[in-house]
Length: 331
Image (tube, rainbow, N blue to C red; front, top):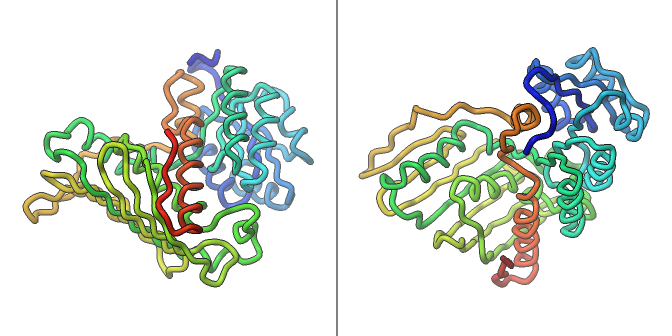
């Protein structure tokens, strides 16, 4: 898709949301010479002031969203606000003719997601989601392994996922502990791993069975999921949001070999020999990918279209956890 820019252009952006996620985007954008953040907005003005002072001294600070989106010369906006604000903010940015990179999830309602996809298509604007793992070297390389070196592995049969984090201990008093906004640790953090499994394998879940508990919070903290995928593989996943350390392990068990992602390092196992894969593909991040797509027309690795499958996956897990039965996903 051609967005009318060329490599001589510098992409001028607004950053909406200057909390923890917004700060990560600010770090990446500040390091990219092809990007210029012209204006910041956060309803908590002190957060925008802090990001400007530490990372983006050239940026102005808008008093409200409309002012930020109307800032002169903008091409695009990065939205890193809480989930419930995504739909109105993304829609407003698209109406302004801006390209949008939004933190996940794109919206909390399926109808809103579909409406944003149609709005972006009708206006020929890039709408992308910030799924970071799709850009990291171990996950990109894992995708290559199962696609380009499939003969070394054979058919994929089983997948095991374990992820834990000190998450519950940090959310008290925040919007993440509000059941009207989010659905807990699986929804907030685990969606990254669920998304990247489909990205790596090309398979989609067709049915899920889940159980979940809230621990000491108002939202789900510990979730276990079993899933059947359309390519024949099965998944067993465990999300622990009240651990005391971060850990992520994703294992792909194939007929001839295993492919292992352990703490973001990649390994191949065969005949009880586990060897690290060192010829990793170069990594990137969603912000650089966004700038690349605008300047060169290259495909963004996390386009907005992935939002609907992820919404359906999450909704099925929550429904199964409530009912205690398998839930089928529609095509």
